[in-house]
Picture 1 (cartoon, rainbow, N blue to C red):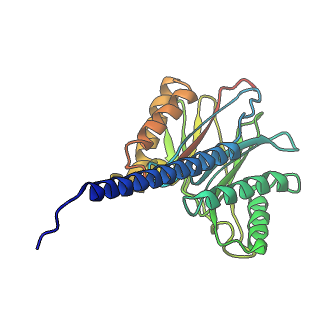
Picture 2 (picture 1 turned 180 degrees about the vertical axis):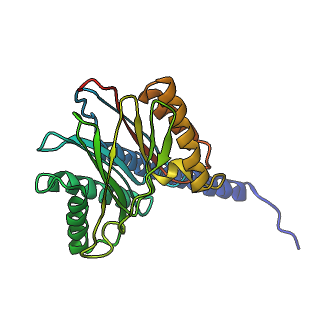
Length: 274
């Protein structure tokens, strides 16, 4: 037999719906708070200002992932080292959560602190790696560290499992760093990080980036690097400026499917210090 629906049944249903709605609102509020906390943490970990030595121009961009907590472990940094040269770093911590962002902060602070102990890029990465291994962290990070002499444009580069950086000159040449790469930071105690030297010529640019810029469901890493290389060629040859190049690279990052956060740090030399 069928049971006749009563007013009491309707009231009970409405009460249940009201309770579920209230619960959903509380969950949404908690999620918003969690996202806001994660985004604030991420922003607080990134530098608010970049150095501006004579003849050198720096610009950077960051874009959060389009899923999850919209926070990850990508970072960039630039600071004046004790010897007057400029330290440039970019990296990517495993994971896309608050823990990854916090670990990213540890790596970035560790690099800055150890730059007062050694100014050699390879040794700096080696010391940072051993520090992270000793802490027993469950996460690891890829990283590129460059030391730039603003007066000469000489760049000394060491990489820890990170993707190559891109360079382009004012006369239309470009390429990717193909130097030997050490393992990610925090994985292997006693790891070594070879150093490769470049020279940033007048009007040239070097583009440091994370894989979220150049790799996604719609784009392979190799093709993404080639696209950034072409962009760098065009902008350097036309002298359009590194701020415009950052915008162009970040537009590319927004077309790759963007399941990862993305960071870019660009350095250019205008010859002002020569």
